[in-house]
Image 1 (cartoon, rainbow, N blue to C red):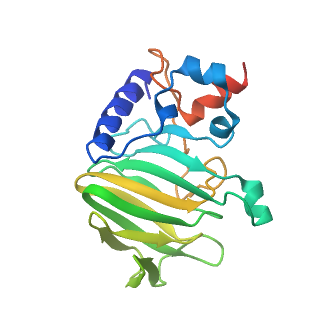
Image 2: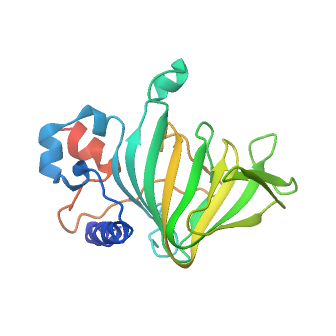
Length: 228
């Protein structure tokens, strides 16, 4: 993706988020220079911040996702079973924009439709070898009520509704009828190692630096901060 396009998506996404009354934390608006000068371990180490991905496929409008990690614990806390064991994200899934089929090994998550259009999820249970079980019925909690779907069934969430996805459950999702503001509340999030896709795609975008970054992405931290 071109950096100019990423900057545009950040501006559009920030306006969309604000339209629902959600206010981003102050560090969201730090310039790259401010982030480099301050180098806060609680932000950089936890990989909080902006995350715009086209999954390395160069077609963001059809295959992509807007994310901002607001808070995140550490993997070592999970291992100890104490400390900050949770994470929170705010996301935008555009109308008909696919977030491709994937699962997590460690992370359990609540996916919440915070407003806009409907959020549609395609769901499969994991097979014994970790792959997609295309025969087993899917059972997931939706706001405390268990829902059963056939393998590959579509779960539609209206604004205010949510689903809990336990580790291993395969899921893809997209907005229907309009762009969707999504909340994610989960156990500790590790986007470097805890995303397994059915297709050979990447989690992050390859960036063409055609202009200066408006804000750094979490995927910029290694090259723009930690290596300097």
